[in-house]
Image 1 (tube, rainbow, N blue to C red):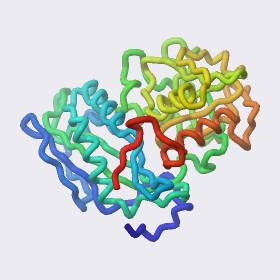
Image 2 (image 1 turned 90 degrees about the horizontal axis):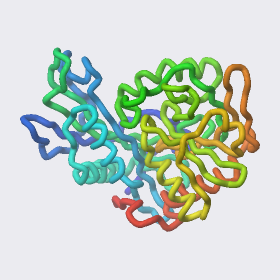
Image 3 (image 1 turned 90 degrees about the vertical axis):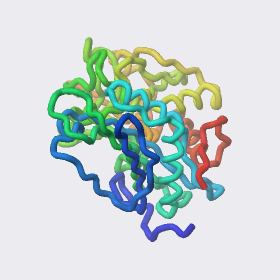
Image 4 (image 1 turned 135 degrees about the vertical axis):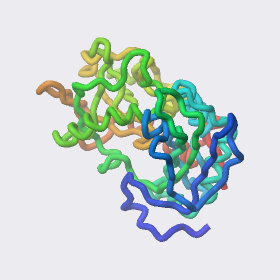
Length: 341
């Protein structure tokens, strides 16, 4: 497969229209068989449920070209399961998980020329999403939906790539207890736009959100989970019912314990103890792992020993191991790699 003529190394994290996308409609209580299409336009009623009451959820995963030249995806079955959880919480029909995985494979294969080559530093980002499509004026769930997947080649999520970032503790709350913080709903991200724009204006890369109930415990950022490393090398990640269950984070914790032999803890992390950690990072599909160099809060700052130039040693080992698995340099645990072509 001949690749598109693109300067892969210069890609940012943005949208580039590719050749094909996948579409399936839910009407009269069932999903149709779905299809690939060239048409990137979505035509909706002005009263569509998604436009009136934000009834939408989405996923994010990537396709990679491995060292062996194969195109693969990383754990798409977990994205399928997480989207099912999101749909249930938002009173949307579940798109069958096995069909989700097959649709991902179908659309990536159709856009194989857009999957960046091995070693380019770029990947093919895959965005499955679902929304209420029929007119809804009363406050209730839609009864017709559309499930779609598009792809776009992307570079690093943060402009500096895997360089340490500076974050600030947000004065806003990301998610309420018993709310929707644990699912990938569009409405969660809408509320994060003002805080992230404010953070960027003030010179920060991201926000750290604390728990809404007590504002004493670390939750996550607007688009990534936290990992911390203690001075004795234990990998710690926050535990909360209002944190999105990141597939990258779960994979990192497995890698830490079962491949690297490190001690791991998933527990409540109080902000007061963050200053005592040796390393910190943000993890998610888009960023993989972005090291945190410092955290600013109420005029003070927490600077991590690795500084603003390099990843800490444990974070670096986690990053290298996980990306090595994704790129085929390191043998993957069973079921983690879905080969496409």
